[in-house]
Length: 130
Image (cartoon, rainbow, N blue to C red; front, side):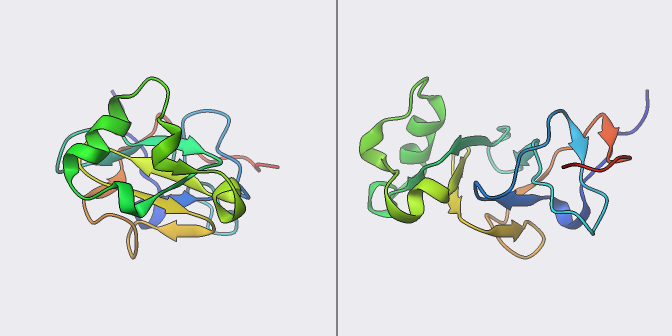
């Protein structure tokens, strides 16, 4: 079995202006910006869930249990998310103990929750993404 490929800079989180890869690939080409689709949390062990087109309402998240409830919800509670304004172009990311909203792009090596990083991918990025 081959070792999983890992994204540069521990992976990247990105808002809605950045397309998610069409399948499980590692971001290896620094000339392109490809969000990681397999972010994992080393604190709670969860694969990070993303919620497209919504920002987290910070006032609704005071403790890890608040993130855990959103992570577990089949349909996210609209009371804890915002879609208007910058929320519509944001992508929210959440695990069982933490979360963040991103409008632009954030490298996990320098931003985002400290415990998050690329969990590895089956394929590397050996082609151009349009």
